[in-house]
Amino acid sequence: MLTKKQLFTRGMLDISPHMLSVIPFGIICGAIGVELGFHPYLVYAMSFIIFGGASQIVFLQLLSGGASSLVAVASVGIINSRHLLYGAVLSEYLEKLSFIKKLLISYVVVDQGFAESNKFFKKNRTEEFLHYHLIGTGCTMWVCWQIATLSGIVLGSFVPEELGLKFAIPLTFIAIVVQDLKKLDHVIVMITCGLSSLLFFDAPFKSYIIISPIIALFVAALLLRLKK
Amino acid sequence: MTLTAIIFAGILTYLTRMTMIALISRDMLGDKIKAVLEYVPSAVFPAIIFPGIFINDFGTFIEMNDPKIFGALVAVIVGYFSKNIIATISAGLVSYWFLIFVVFN
Image 1 (spheres, rainbow over the protein chains, first blue to last red):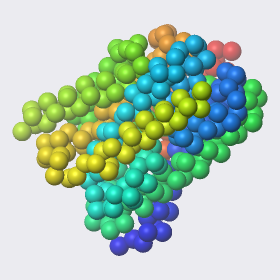
Image 2: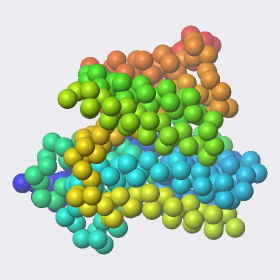
Image 3: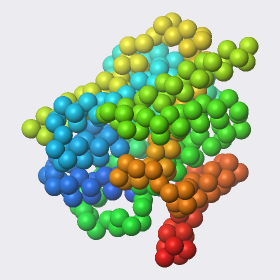
């Protein structure tokens, strides 16, 4: 049995390699916000209130492009709706927690944290305080994200655009799924999702980000049926 | 005005995180659904990966000789064999930079 502290530390360690891409991306997010002409306090407030990487950039870009607040808010909601899927997966491991703890822990559920904690949960189902791993990944992400976006706000136009640091984001997610390329069913599901995301990229409100996972999960259900 | 919109966007985002964790209990998800949910990482992350590689800042498709495709391929190969996140990300970035700063310059 691992202690709460050990699990928390393990979570921190498991997510920390992703900071290599999260920190540059956070700096870019902060810098773009200021460059688009938004007040630094507002740009930072998003990191605290929304705490959702790409959705923060999309929100500011839409508003500065003249879109209504309603469209911007709806887009953030749709981009982040993928968390519903993460929650459905995690709920199995978190069901013993009290309602209040569930409400608190939800705030720190992020893509990379979900991915790394889910991998850990699958291997260590019997641990009693599993959720401390999720708190570890989530809090690490939160602290780094706040520092990174704040730095971006301060640095502003000093952030070199030609480095193309945004490219670190797809790379971080490649690192998460790459080992599943060994399994043919997962490869099919990934390709379905990837191609759908390109096909539906122009769908309104950035909805490709939830449409393609739904299509891919349907394909996964079909594959499971064929396997039997 | 913008702050109000940010708060609404924040509430909405929090709801997407909280709903399934706090309001769903194990019995509500059958075994079949749980089996499908095993595929969530493979079904979600390519929707971030593919557009991040194949679509540029202006929302259009990149050329087939774009350095990002090469960088992503290097990252996949290094990641597959090294099983190391830092190696995967750095290999992708460095090979991408090599192309844009050295080869295409």
